[in-house]
Length: 289
Ligand SMILES: *[C@@H]1O[C@H](CO)[C@@H](O)[C@H](O)[C@H]1NC(C)=O
Ligand SMILES: *[C@@H]1O[C@H](CO)[C@@H](O)[C@H](O)[C@H]1NC(C)=O
Ligand SMILES: *[C@@H]1O[C@H](CO)[C@@H](O)[C@H](O)[C@H]1NC(C)=O
Ligand SMILES: *[C@@H]1O[C@H](CO)[C@@H](O)[C@H](O)[C@H]1NC(C)=O
Ligand SMILES: *[C@@H]1O[C@H](CO)[C@@H](O)[C@H](O)[C@H]1NC(C)=O
Ligand SMILES: *[C@@H]1O[C@H](CO)[C@@H](O)[C@H](O)[C@H]1NC(C)=O
Image 1 (cartoon, rainbow, N blue to C red):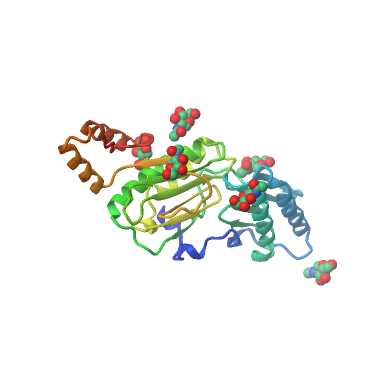
Image 2: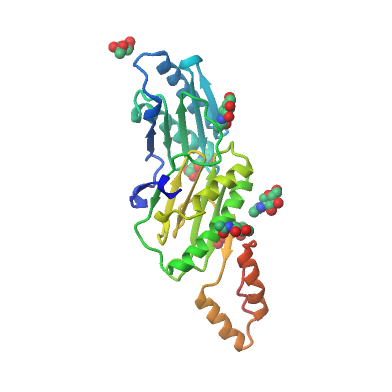
C-alpha cells in the first residue's frame, strides 16, 4: 500500500495556506479541444460547483449528456464555515482551468476543500485512489513512545471523525515531552461517505503507518475520500474533541515516588493499564491526591 503514496519531501510549513493547491491532472481521460461542447459544459459545471457548493459544503452534479457530459464534485472540510468554503471553492474551480488546461479529468486538493472533475460519474469510494503524502523533515523525540501515542490518538480520532455529522475530528494527546507537550491529529472524510466508509477510509491512512511518517514530527495525507494531518503544534481552529492523557515515563516515576510517600492511590494507575490498551475515552491515569 505504501508504494501508492507519492512522497514529496516538502517542509510542511511551506504548505500551509488554502491558496496552495495540488493539481492532479488525469492524462488517462484525454483532452478536449478549444471551443468544444465539453469545454462549455465544463465551464458551466465549474461555475455551478462554486456558486452552489459552499452552502452545504458538498455538491455532486453534472452538465451535458452523452460523450460531452462532465461530472463534478466539491467538498469542504467539516470544520470550515461557508465563507471560507466559498473562498476555497472559488479558487479551486478557477485553478482547474489554469492548472489542467483542456484535461477532461482533474482533481485539485487544498487543505480545506477539493474539486473533482471527470468525464465519468464519480463513485463514492471508501479509499483514496492516489493519495498525496507529505512529511515533516524533523524527527520526533522518544520515537517508540511517539509511535504508540500517535497510533492510539489516530485510532480514537478516526472513530470520532467517522461518528461526527461533519465527518471531522481533532484529537490531542497530552504529556508527550517537556519540549512538545502535545501531539495533535486532524482527520476528515468527504461529507457523502457513510460512518462505516469514513472509518474504513481513515483506517487506511495509518494502518499500517506509511513509512514516510515513521519517526517524523508531522505528516499529512490528502485524498479524494479522506485525509489527515498530525503535528506537534496546533494547526487548526477550534478545540480538540478527543483528548488522551497518558503520563510519560517520568510522570510515572514521579507518581510512584509519590506513592511510596503515600500521596497517590496506586490503584488509579493500575486501573488505567486496561483502558490504555483498550483505548477507552479520556484517560487520566495519574491522580495525585
Ligand atoms: C475559440 O473561440 C475563440 C473566440 O470565439 C477564438 O478566438 C478562437 O480562435 C477559437 N479557438 C479555436 C481552436 O477554434
Ligand atoms: C469564517 O471562518 C474564518 C476563518 O476562521 C473567520 O475569519 C471568519 O470570521 C468566519 N466567518 C463567519 C461568518 O463566521
Ligand atoms: C454522484 O451522483 C451520482 C448520480 O447523480 C451517483 O451515481 C454517484 O454515486 C454520486 N457520487 C457521489 C460521490 O456522491
Ligand atoms: C483501535 O482501537 C480498537 C478498539 O478500541 C482496537 O481493537 C484496534 O486494534 C485499534 N487499532 C489500532 C490500529 O490501534
Ligand atoms: C459512534 O457511534 C456509535 C453509534 O452511534 C456509538 O455506539 C459509538 O460509541 C460511537 N463511537 C465514538 C468513538 O464516539
Ligand atoms: C481537550 O483539551 C483541550 C485543551 O487542553 C480543551 O480545550 C478541550 O476542551 C478538551 N476537550 C475535551 C473533549 O475534553
